[in-house]
Length: 72
Image 1 (cartoon, one colour):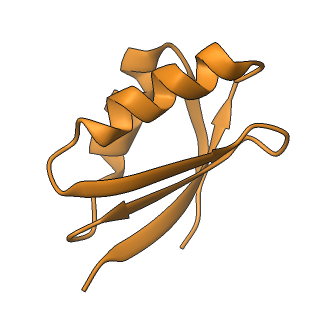
Image 2: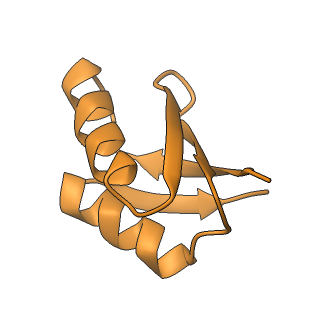
């Protein structure tokens, strides 16, 4: 059963930011969907199994942004 977690990403200001973060998170194994809400800086990630926070943080860092928080 898919798992969706929501994270807060700091520093996203435009469509390119959304594309960069989406591309890095979509490339993670098991990720089936990534939805970014630019006005709030929230990113919802749906995956086959829970993702390690460090894995998500590394993907966001690779995109050039900072993971500012994680929720359920």
